[in-house]
Length: 355
Ligand SMILES: NC(=O)C1=CN([C@@H]2O[C@H](COP(=O)(O)OP(=O)(O)OC[C@H]3O[C@@H](n4cnc5c(N)ncnc54)[C@H](OP(=O)(O)O)[C@@H]3O)[C@@H](O)[C@H]2O)C=CC1
Ligand SMILES: CC(=O)N[C@@H](CCC(=O)OP(=O)(O)O)C(=O)O
View 1: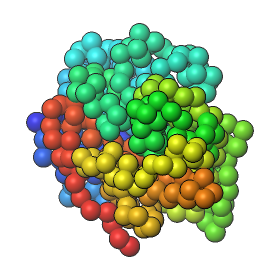
View 2: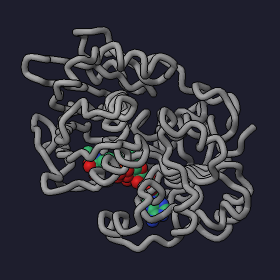
View 3: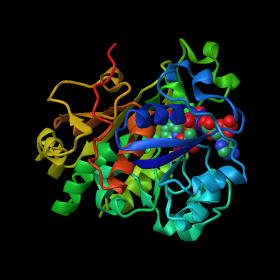
């Protein structure tokens, strides 16, 4: 059995990790941490865990840190800046680290420091970290000891653009114009479990708003995905605009592109289907059928629909996922499966919840 620990077990991605890993046949959760709930049983705070887990939260003190070093893998479901303070000691002890925050996502230190407003404490380790998007980095993930689990919006953006940028590289000709507009919506759980005025029920229910209009920290991650991960031979300018929608889980990203003359000659439905043919967790919808967030709720599947209009030179990719599963905890478990040589779908191959 793989011995796993979850640092930050009281947050929304932490509880989602407990749900997924408790049902995983090859994993035992041996440690859960929370500073505010240390000493409390997890199922007292989350009755959904009664009969599933009898674990008690531990504080993040020296004793816990030495227990973490006995584990095979530690998931950090914590705010940005926590994992990077523990990662060196853990990797030196042979422990694999999967950070659900952004400490190991951006290769550029200056981007990290600019967008996350803090210095990076282990830049050398950052150089060895692998960006945890299995559909693009599967081979590297197999040997990774530190994984930066992608942000939820970048997962939808990079997977929505992958077939296009890859074909553009292959044909060495622009198939879409430089400007890409990503109009994205997230459920409120994307902001985490901390109480705040902006996130209370009366503010978020029966309401709809944009945020991060002047710039959001996921923009450099999306740009890195296009330039480095997809190795784009052509430059692209991304306009990324996130919105908060009045639902709990779910994310819907509409990616708008303009086709070049060469791009109009491509059958994009066929290209997307071919690109994701062997991917267990990326589903390309049949032509003319558009995905909704309910079709992925509580599942690790991401669904994409492509709309092509040659007369208007428009190409639109519509991407949906559950922000807490493929957008966070599910993707982390998918990464863990790859890092430990397990079948990638283990513990993740369940249907979404409808309604
Ligand atoms: N929610 C989402 O959809 C997504 C979230 N993420 C990222 O995953 C991470 C976790 O998100 P989420 O679960 O929503 O966050 P929450 O705010 O819901 O939970 C944060 C958890 O971290 C613990 N924590 C907070 N500060 C510290 C600290 N300094 N040291 C140790 N533990 C700490 C908290 O418990 P306590 O204070 O008791 O210790 C809590 O368990 C974040 O970095 C987030 O950006 C990524 C993709 C999607
Ligand atoms: C709705 C909402 O607030 N979403 C979060 C993004 C989700 C997330 O947690 O991503 P990171 O891991 O990069 O922080 C936000 O826009 O800040």
